[in-house]
Image (tube, rainbow, N blue to C red; front, side):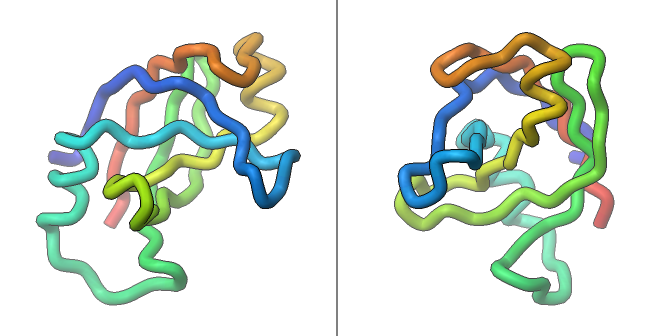
Length: 97
């Protein structure tokens, strides 16, 4: 379960327009949820994310409205990979905890 791969559309958070996310695929979210772990802020889970050739350490967060985890995609990653709102992103997540 340590490495998860999926493709998801990049979307903009309505509450803060400068924040962009991809929704972790349902099956990948279920695999993250099934592993017991100590509670962290906002229910976050530490991951190493890779989109294209860009990798970074961050966290995924549960989104009750979507029923899945969401991965924040920072501006430097979007710029390096040429991603804009609505574009598909090929994501590899390595769960670190």
